[in-house]
Image (cartoon, rainbow, N blue to C red; front, side, top):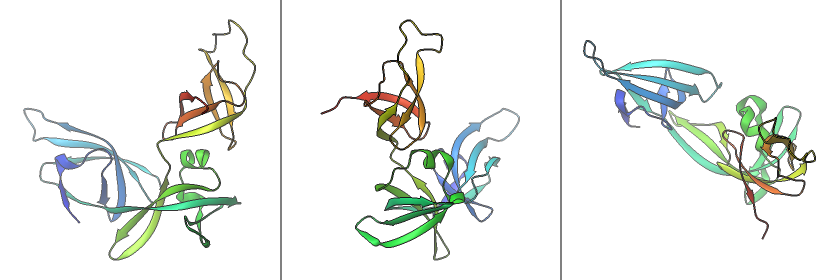
Length: 196
Protein backbone atom coordinates (compact mmCIF):
# COMPACT_ATOMS: atom_id res chain seq x y z
CA UNK A 1 0.00 0.00 0.00
CA UNK A 2 1.21 3.46 -0.87
CA UNK A 3 1.92 6.25 1.56
CA UNK A 4 0.18 9.54 0.82
CA UNK A 5 1.71 12.89 1.70
CA UNK A 6 -0.50 15.44 3.47
CA UNK A 7 -1.40 17.22 0.20
CA UNK A 8 -2.25 13.94 -1.61
CA UNK A 9 -5.14 13.25 0.79
CA UNK A 10 -7.96 14.34 -1.53
CA UNK A 11 -11.62 13.65 -2.33
CA UNK A 12 -12.54 10.09 -3.31
CA UNK A 13 -9.34 8.67 -1.78
CA UNK A 14 -9.50 5.84 0.75
CA UNK A 15 -7.03 6.03 3.63
CA UNK A 16 -6.14 4.14 6.82
CA UNK A 17 -6.57 6.39 9.86
CA UNK A 18 -6.24 4.97 13.37
CA UNK A 19 -6.22 1.45 11.85
CA UNK A 20 -9.61 1.87 10.13
CA UNK A 21 -10.57 2.70 6.52
CA UNK A 22 -11.91 6.18 5.72
CA UNK A 23 -13.22 7.80 2.56
CA UNK A 24 -12.06 11.39 2.07
CA UNK A 25 -15.13 13.56 1.40
CA UNK A 26 -13.42 16.95 1.08
CA UNK A 27 -9.99 18.49 1.57
CA UNK A 28 -8.53 21.98 1.59
CA UNK A 29 -4.82 22.76 1.73
CA UNK A 30 -4.42 26.02 3.64
CA UNK A 31 -1.21 28.01 3.33
CA UNK A 32 -0.69 30.95 5.64
CA UNK A 33 2.41 33.10 5.91
CA UNK A 34 3.04 32.43 9.59
CA UNK A 35 2.37 28.68 9.58
CA UNK A 36 3.40 25.68 7.55
CA UNK A 37 0.76 24.40 5.09
CA UNK A 38 -1.88 22.01 6.37
CA UNK A 39 -4.66 19.95 4.83
CA UNK A 40 -8.09 20.24 6.48
CA UNK A 41 -9.94 17.02 5.68
CA UNK A 42 -13.51 15.79 6.15
CA UNK A 43 -13.75 12.01 5.99
CA UNK A 44 -16.18 9.17 6.73
CA UNK A 45 -15.38 5.94 8.51
CA UNK A 46 -16.24 3.11 6.11
CA UNK A 47 -17.01 0.66 8.91
CA UNK A 48 -19.39 2.62 11.15
CA UNK A 49 -20.20 5.67 8.95
CA UNK A 50 -18.91 8.18 11.50
CA UNK A 51 -17.83 11.57 10.11
CA UNK A 52 -14.45 12.94 11.20
CA UNK A 53 -12.67 16.26 10.65
CA UNK A 54 -8.89 16.08 10.78
CA UNK A 55 -5.97 18.38 9.97
CA UNK A 56 -2.87 16.85 8.39
CA UNK A 57 0.36 18.83 8.53
CA UNK A 58 3.17 18.86 5.98
CA UNK A 59 5.16 16.27 7.98
CA UNK A 60 2.21 13.80 8.10
CA UNK A 61 1.74 10.78 5.85
CA UNK A 62 -1.08 8.23 5.79
CA UNK A 63 -1.42 4.79 4.31
CA UNK A 64 -3.73 4.48 1.31
CA UNK A 65 -6.41 1.87 2.01
CA UNK A 66 -6.57 -1.13 -0.27
CA UNK A 67 -10.24 -0.97 -1.33
CA UNK A 68 -11.40 -3.11 -4.21
CA UNK A 69 -14.82 -3.50 -5.81
CA UNK A 70 -16.65 -6.69 -6.63
CA UNK A 71 -20.03 -7.12 -8.34
CA UNK A 72 -22.93 -8.75 -6.52
CA UNK A 73 -26.67 -9.07 -7.09
CA UNK A 74 -29.08 -7.70 -4.48
CA UNK A 75 -31.74 -10.34 -3.82
CA UNK A 76 -34.02 -9.26 -0.97
CA UNK A 77 -34.36 -7.84 2.54
CA UNK A 78 -35.58 -9.87 5.51
CA UNK A 79 -35.85 -7.79 8.68
CA UNK A 80 -32.42 -6.23 9.24
CA UNK A 81 -30.71 -8.70 6.88
CA UNK A 82 -29.89 -7.83 3.27
CA UNK A 83 -29.21 -10.85 1.07
CA UNK A 84 -26.94 -10.87 -1.99
CA UNK A 85 -25.48 -13.43 -4.37
CA UNK A 86 -22.70 -13.70 -6.89
CA UNK A 87 -24.04 -12.13 -10.14
CA UNK A 88 -23.75 -15.38 -12.11
CA UNK A 89 -24.55 -17.87 -9.33
CA UNK A 90 -27.75 -17.30 -7.29
CA UNK A 91 -26.83 -20.22 -4.98
CA UNK A 92 -23.67 -18.43 -3.80
CA UNK A 93 -25.50 -16.24 -1.26
CA UNK A 94 -24.34 -14.07 1.61
CA UNK A 95 -25.91 -11.63 4.03
CA UNK A 96 -24.99 -8.10 5.10
CA UNK A 97 -26.41 -6.43 8.17
CA UNK A 98 -28.39 -3.21 7.97
CA UNK A 99 -25.56 -1.26 9.66
CA UNK A 100 -23.11 -2.00 6.84
CA UNK A 101 -25.31 -0.28 4.22
CA UNK A 102 -25.80 3.48 4.33
CA UNK A 103 -29.35 4.88 4.26
CA UNK A 104 -29.02 6.55 0.84
CA UNK A 105 -27.92 3.25 -0.73
CA UNK A 106 -30.78 1.32 0.93
CA UNK A 107 -33.21 3.90 -0.41
CA UNK A 108 -32.36 3.20 -4.06
CA UNK A 109 -31.44 -0.51 -4.08
CA UNK A 110 -33.68 -2.63 -6.29
CA UNK A 111 -34.19 -6.38 -6.15
CA UNK A 112 -32.28 -8.46 -8.71
CA UNK A 113 -30.00 -5.57 -9.73
CA UNK A 114 -26.24 -5.58 -9.52
CA UNK A 115 -24.37 -3.46 -6.98
CA UNK A 116 -20.66 -2.94 -6.28
CA UNK A 117 -19.33 -4.28 -2.99
CA UNK A 118 -16.50 -2.29 -1.40
CA UNK A 119 -13.94 -4.77 -0.08
CA UNK A 120 -11.37 -3.60 2.48
CA UNK A 121 -8.19 -5.65 2.52
CA UNK A 122 -5.94 -5.15 5.53
CA UNK A 123 -3.28 -7.57 6.77
CA UNK A 124 -4.49 -10.30 4.36
CA UNK A 125 -8.06 -10.09 5.69
CA UNK A 126 -11.01 -9.20 3.45
CA UNK A 127 -14.06 -7.41 4.78
CA UNK A 128 -17.13 -6.02 2.97
CA UNK A 129 -17.46 -2.46 4.25
CA UNK A 130 -20.08 -0.96 1.98
CA UNK A 131 -22.10 -0.97 -1.19
CA UNK A 132 -22.05 1.44 -4.12
CA UNK A 133 -24.82 1.85 -6.65
CA UNK A 134 -24.33 3.34 -10.10
CA UNK A 135 -24.26 7.13 -9.72
CA UNK A 136 -27.35 7.51 -11.92
CA UNK A 137 -30.20 5.00 -12.08
CA UNK A 138 -33.52 4.97 -13.94
CA UNK A 139 -36.78 4.36 -12.08
CA UNK A 140 -40.44 4.19 -13.15
CA UNK A 141 -42.83 6.55 -11.35
CA UNK A 142 -45.64 4.53 -9.72
CA UNK A 143 -47.42 7.36 -7.87
CA UNK A 144 -47.55 11.08 -8.62
CA UNK A 145 -50.07 13.72 -7.50
CA UNK A 146 -51.99 15.38 -10.33
CA UNK A 147 -50.70 18.61 -11.81
CA UNK A 148 -52.56 21.75 -10.79
CA UNK A 149 -52.24 24.42 -13.42
CA UNK A 150 -50.40 27.47 -12.12
CA UNK A 151 -49.23 25.70 -8.94
CA UNK A 152 -45.64 26.89 -8.57
CA UNK A 153 -45.82 27.82 -4.87
CA UNK A 154 -43.91 24.64 -4.09
CA UNK A 155 -41.05 25.67 -6.38
CA UNK A 156 -42.37 23.68 -9.33
CA UNK A 157 -41.75 20.29 -7.68
CA UNK A 158 -43.86 17.48 -6.27
CA UNK A 159 -43.08 14.28 -4.40
CA UNK A 160 -43.37 11.12 -6.52
CA UNK A 161 -43.03 7.43 -5.61
CA UNK A 162 -40.64 5.18 -7.57
CA UNK A 163 -41.00 1.51 -8.50
CA UNK A 164 -38.77 0.47 -5.58
CA UNK A 165 -40.91 2.39 -3.04
CA UNK A 166 -38.58 5.38 -2.59
CA UNK A 167 -39.96 8.92 -2.81
CA UNK A 168 -38.17 11.83 -4.47
CA UNK A 169 -38.90 15.41 -5.42
CA UNK A 170 -39.50 15.79 -9.16
CA UNK A 171 -40.75 18.54 -11.50
CA UNK A 172 -44.49 19.07 -11.90
CA UNK A 173 -44.53 17.60 -15.44
CA UNK A 174 -43.54 14.10 -14.19
CA UNK A 175 -46.49 11.67 -14.28
CA UNK A 176 -47.24 8.05 -13.36
CA UNK A 177 -45.50 5.70 -15.82
CA UNK A 178 -42.67 8.13 -16.64
CA UNK A 179 -39.12 6.84 -16.35
CA UNK A 180 -36.88 9.30 -14.51
CA UNK A 181 -33.15 9.31 -13.83
CA UNK A 182 -32.03 9.82 -10.21
CA UNK A 183 -28.59 10.68 -8.80
CA UNK A 184 -28.25 7.93 -6.18
CA UNK A 185 -25.60 9.83 -4.20
CA UNK A 186 -27.72 12.96 -3.65
CA UNK A 187 -31.23 11.58 -4.21
CA UNK A 188 -31.91 14.36 -6.71
CA UNK A 189 -33.99 14.15 -9.89
CA UNK A 190 -31.72 14.42 -12.95
CA UNK A 191 -33.97 14.09 -16.01
CA UNK A 192 -36.94 12.35 -17.56
CA UNK A 193 -35.86 9.46 -19.78
CA UNK A 194 -37.53 9.05 -23.15
CA UNK A 195 -39.08 5.61 -23.60
CA UNK A 196 -37.57 3.72 -26.50
